[in-house]
Image (cartoon, rainbow, N blue to C red; front, side, top):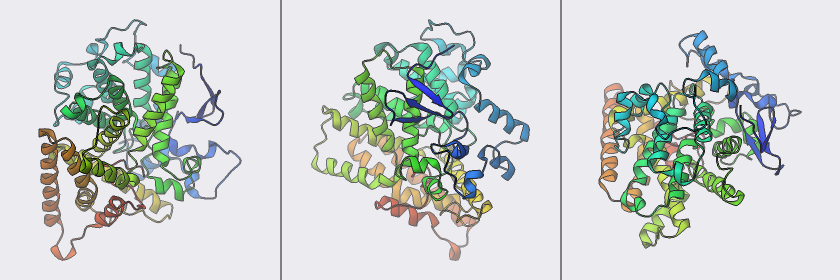
Length: 460
C-alpha cells in the first residue's frame, strides 16, 4: 500500500541512499536481539549477552506477560510489517485518503473525550487514559495536541502519513518494558504540553517550536531496550559501538525517529533544507535528555537566570528553553500527585531490577540500584529527588514562577516525605541507608554514573 521512496532496506537497518554515512535504525523487532545482525556481521563477541534472546528472556524469568501464549502473541505482533498491521489494526480499518480532523472521535468513548478536554491539567491520569483508548494513548494524545494547536493544517501535514507515523512510533516502543514504553512517552508528551502552556513559553514560542517540542516528547525514548547505556557498553552491544559509547540510547532514539519520518515521508512536501533542519533540531532536543549531561544544562540554565539574559525572541534561546522543558517533562514523575508518582516509581525500579536479574543470570556485575535484594523503591526515589529532580525544578520555578511550578514542587516534597515514611515503616533505623544517593549525586555533579537514574531519561 505504501512505498518507501528515500530509504533502502538492509535487514533491520535503513539508510539514506543519498548519504551513505547516515544510518537509521528501523526496529522491526527488539533492539536487544539485533547484535547478531548488526552493522558488522563478521564481528562476533564472546560475551553471552550477544546470544541472549530478550524477546523471551523476561518470560523465562517470570516477568512481563502472564502467560507464554500472550507473550508469544505480542512478539509476533511486533514483527508484523506495517502493511499487515494496517489490515489488522482497528485504528486504521476503513480509513480513506481524505481523513477529517475529527477522525479520532470514532475511537474515543465519552470518558476519553472528557479527559482530553482537561489535557492541560497536571493531575492528568495517563494510565486511565491509556486504558480508555485501548492502549493507544500516545497516538491519540499526540494527534489531539497537534490538531489542537492547528499544526496539521498550518504545516499541511498529510493525515494518512501523520497517522501512519504516530502508529509506527507507538509500535516501536517496547511495551514489555515496565517503564520505558509508549505510556511513558504519552506521559512526557502531556507534561510537555503543560509546560508549553506556561505564560513565559506560550507568548514566545512559534508554531514550529511547538511542533518540534511535541514530536521530541513523543519520540524521546523511541525503541528503548529497557537496559541502560553502561549495560550496552559492557556487553559490547552494536549500538554502543555505532555511537562510540556516547549518548548511545539518545542517539538511537533520535535516529529511529528520523528513520520513521523519512519512511513515512511526513515532511516530504517541505523544502529539503527545512526537513533536514527539523531533523537536526529534533536530535538536539532528544540528546538533551541524556542524564549524564544534566549538570551541563543545569549550569547553563542557572547562569542565564542569574544574568537575566534569556531572550525568547532569540531562536537559539527558545530552543534551549525547549530543551529544558523536555528535560523537566522527562523526569517529572516525582512532581506528579502521589497516586501517579508512586506507580511510575515502582515501574522504573522494576525495570532496574529486571536488568539486575539479567546480569545475575549471566554472571555479570550487577549495576548499582539494579539489585532487588539490596535496594528499595523508596531509597532510590529519595536519592533521585534530592540530587537530580529538586535542583532542576527549583531552577525551572525561577524561570517560570507560576502556580504549576509551585504545585510541582509541592507534590515533590509530599512524595519525598511519603517515601521516607514508608522507609521508616519497613526498615529499622539502624539499617536505614540511601543506596540511591551516591549515584544520583554523582550525576548531579557532572560525573558519570555506572547506572541509570530512575524516573529520568534512564538512558545514560
